[in-house]
Structures are given as C-alpha cells and as structure tokens.
Image (cartoon, rainbow, N blue to C red; front, side, top):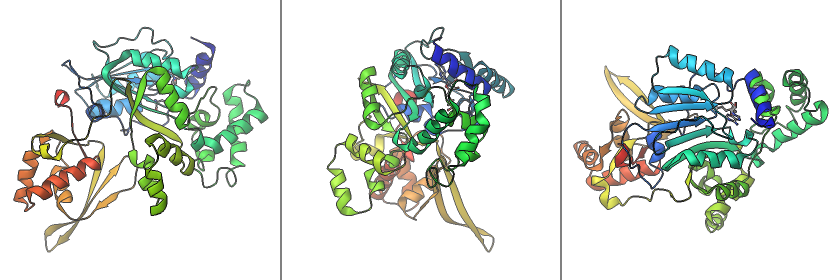
Length: 407
Ligand SMILES: C[S@@+](CC[C@H](N)C(=O)[O-])C[C@H]1O[C@@H](n2cnc3c(N)ncnc32)[C@H](O)[C@@H]1O
C-alpha cells in the first residue's frame, strides 16, 4: 500500500464514512443504469455490482435490500467500516452482498465475475486516491464491455469556499498533527467563516456537520478535484467516455437560463461547453455521472412508431405522493407528485401522462407499450395521446427502457 493510501486509511478508520444508517441512493438501480448504455449483456445469470470504496456500506446495503436478485460486492481499505458493513448484512440476513478489503490502486485479491462487473459504483472515492487515473484504469479492467460506472467526484469550482477553509486550516494548523488533534481548532476556524466565506453557498452547514463529515470535508489527507475539462481529460487518458449525468436537469442550460436570448446563444454551444458554462454560473459541488468503456455509447432514443412493441419499466428510484380528499365517504384524488432522491416534489397537472402514472406507479414488472395503451384506452385516453404520454414519461426519466437481456 502506498504512503498516501496508508494515510487515507488511518483517517477513515478513525472516522469511518459516512455517518448515518442504511439508505437508498440515486444512481444505484442496476437495470436502470444498464439501460443508459447502448451495449447489451451477452451472458445470463445474476447481475454483478461492485461498490469501489463502499465505506460503511450504507448505500450498498440499501441496494442489496431493494435488488435481491443482484449480487453486490463492496470493497474498501477501511477495515473498521468493512466489519461494520458485514455485521449489518448478517444482521439483516442479506445473502446477496459481500464485503472485502481491497485497495483500488491495485485491486489485488479481487474476485471478478466471469465477463466482469455489470455495474460499478464509486461515490466520493476516486478523488482521494493517490493516483485517480490509475484507480480508474484498474476499475476499467474489471468492468464488463457493456458495463457502466456510476460515480461521484468533487467539482473544483463548486467547492471553492470549502477550499479556502481547507487552505486556511492547513496554514494555521499544518497537516502533520493527528487529525483528531486538529479537529476542534479546525471547527472553530470554519465557524468563524459561517457568516462570510460560507454564507449563501452549498457549504453553509459545514460548521454544523458531524465529526465524520467534517473530517472528510475539511481535513482529508488527499483530495483531487475536477473541472469539466480535467474530468474529460481523465476519461480520455483512461479510455472511458461520458454517458450521462445522473441528474441531467442540473446540467441543462434550459433549466439554468431563463432569458430566451441567452438560452438561444447557449444552445449553439457544444455539449461540453454547455456544461462548462453551467459549472461557472451554478453551484455544482460534485460531478455525478455514468461512464463506460470508450467503445460503448449512450443508448439512442427510441422511435415513437415502435412504442407499441417497446419494453418499458417504471424508474424504481422515483417516489410518488398522492393527495386525496374524502368527500361524502368517497376518496377523491386531488393530485399526484413525484420526486427524485431528496429533490423537491413535482406536482403533475391532470392529463394522459398523469393518468398513465397513476396506473404505473406501483408496477414493478416491465411492460410493453401496447399493454399500457390498452389500459389507457379503458380510461378514455386515445392511442395518440397514450403514445405521447409514454414519450413524456421517458423524457422525464419516470419510465425507462430496460434492455431485453436484463428484463
Ligand atoms: C468519502 S468515503 C465514501 C464512502 C462511500 N462510497 C459512500 O459514498 O458512502 C471514501 C471511501 O473511500 C475509501 N478509499 C479511499 N482510498 C481507497 C483505496 N485506495 N482503495 C479502497 N478504498 C479506498 C475510504 O476508505 C472511504 O471509505
């Protein structure tokens, strides 16, 4: 293990990340992720997912509960966190998740399923590696040809106020004393910036976060962060390519710019320049994206003429809330809202798309377009409106198109 990795391990073993209990995160459903790539899986059998740098495994355990037919493996260098994660899995009786000690810089000892992992998650890890390019190249070697990597790394522009705090703490406290000794003075320093440097930024809550979160944010022994250009350079160096953002709305000029003239100009920019623009004008503290081997590509859109025979599935990462009212003993539906992760609820207007969603929201098996068109016809929706409604659902990512091989 190299010296930097040793330091990282020492810090995380004292402050195992993250705090909190088992949770379900966005960008974690294996079939949904695979639907974003063009290449399909050639083999049969269960899907295999690797969480590279799983920490205490709270995200991976959530995945294992919700995707019982998928096999999960979590790796990390943090022995304290791995033990806790394995104990949690045993306590829950989970048979589809394992944890093992393994350094991402070498991947020595990793058991790779035949053909490679279908999906790799790596959230908040690559930027702490002593050589992120080497770590990413290693992950590429164990990622199946059709496989996708769902990952998060720090975005340098979005973290600028935090970097001022980190630099300040380094000037004042150095970086040779044990992290535990620097913790309280660093907290006091950050507190002093609450109403200045941190105010009105995504980092405003830094003085209030738990010790585990604070150490990870402000006293990390090693951290590289990226801007759009350096991110894409890393992909090129490693033979990988960008497939999509996990939350495309956050990188859409349509959402960022209200003025028509500005928007028209922005639309003339290349896709990469649109992202470069967003990173300058919006707070984007991290890049959450899906990437693949350079030879794979984003799945092409579908032809609405083929909607009847196309296979769809409801996005399992969306939550719904139904507002009802009792009128003289009868339940009346007032509205339907949906939400991705911790985003705000989006309330839907009445119409064919909402009717379709009412029918689909509890559906957990894939279905073909024809069957939904038929059910909607019983609700008085014409075939043409039903096809439009399905397209809108796909556009909003509420419904996706699983690959036949994984359905
Ligand atoms: C910020 S935590 C993220 C944990 C988890 N992915 C999450 O999102 O909750 C970073 C994790 O990466 C792990 N890590 C850092 N360098 C590593 C390496 N070379 N090999 C394996 N894990 C590593 C740390 O031990 C730590 O658990």
